[in-house]
Image 1 (cartoon, rainbow, N blue to C red):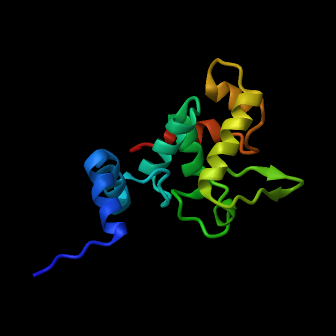
Image 2: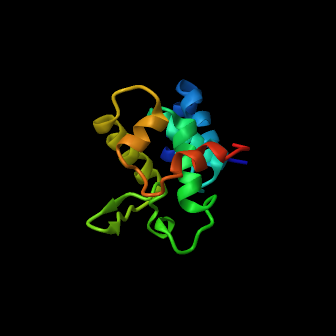
Amino acid sequence: MRSTFSFKSLLLIVFIQFNPICIFSALEKHTDPSTEYPPFTLTVKNLKIALENAGVQHADIVLRQAILETGWFKCTNCSLSRNNIFGFWYKKKYIQFDDWKDCVAYYKRWQDRHYSGGDYYVFLKKVGYATDPNYVKRLKSIKGI
């Protein structure tokens, strides 16, 4: 019985022989969806990861902001429909984002422009982040995250 090899088969064998780690790393990355970043589903866990990876300061408080603004990511008549998990406004309208991760990046840029240190709750109140006078109290009341 004669064995036939194509040129592509030969290249693949040579590549695997000289670079096995790259091949198996690539296969592992593409076959395990849990290793993909950024995560696609908006959950508390995925948002924590995204906030930390983006370098957002006071990520625990910012996570509470997203939870409060979106009703634990379940609201139907809020900014969530625009992937705006923090309720950002411009000209009396919610800002539209292609993806919730874009909103995280926007929050990071906003935070870098406006926050210069100190108590983050005081900062949010000072900049007028929310019109609700009990906003900070409501943020602090969110438990279980």
